[in-house]
Image 1 (tube, rainbow, N blue to C red):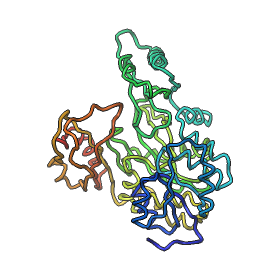
Image 2: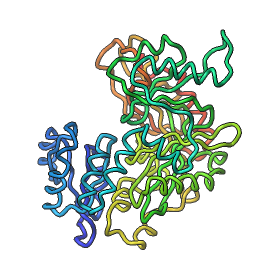
Image 3: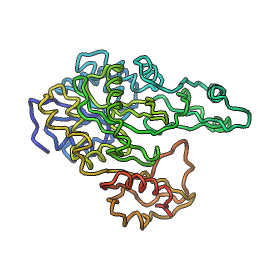
Image 4: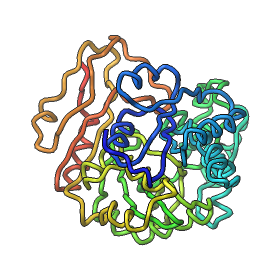
Length: 408
């Protein structure tokens, strides 16, 4: 454990992430892990400061949690996962004596409220609506395609069905026909409906302090749900100034004083930027790990710097590098899904394993031979990591992995 600075803030990590814990343990701040009771034994064995808390329960006990953290000298709570964002907002409202932080966290958790707030802030969004049952979905699909002047027999333009409060591709379905609607389970309602936006989809990771962007990374998606790399290609980085202005609009619209945001955008063929959604926690697909591989700074330690009320401007300036120019190369990862219905073993393709850009993977042999049918976007079986100096070569390599079998 690195020696801790008593003049710096004492932070609480909300959620369980070994990468986050390891990073903060090596940093100069005091910290406390707030996670479900099953993590207690591991923390005791590894001298990790720990407080048990069940985040699945309703927010009614958030004030009790805030009081307990205050008694232990904690200054601020940092959400590590989507499910802890609202908890952190409620707790920080007490710790930082700023009641608006609770309402703000609810905007980050409810995709429908989020879209409305963005729209009120003058941010361009697609057409959206709430759905309470399958009839709402069919009506929205029909209205969108009537608006697009589709004729009988024309294929429908797809719409997107998203859970209000889940992260990433979880609970995300693409709907093209009424038959697709029949496959939606009752428990997935209510949900958000969105029109489809054709274009270049990408994400942003922004560390914010004192309402200012301290570091902004652009993550380029190769295929949503499959692959991403950082920094982006020069063609996408050419829009950095515009993208930065959009993030500044988000800071104003959502009244963000500090922290970390992970918004997603579409750049359409007519060069228009559309806001997709924004999260107030680290992204999936180990994006912070990719940023560290490319730039050398630890994104979880960056969260601590951005959240800690005792961070100084000098520390911020020293911590974050210059975007793009300070990158040592381009880092990407590919989420592996079995392409066969029955598999028996893991077998990394030879052309992948022998490629100079391939670094390592986090895949394991299958526990079951029959591959479950994917629901919505599904969940990948693990990640394969790549690093190289040519972003176009890396992009094409990540795309090519979709054609290969990792499980046979």
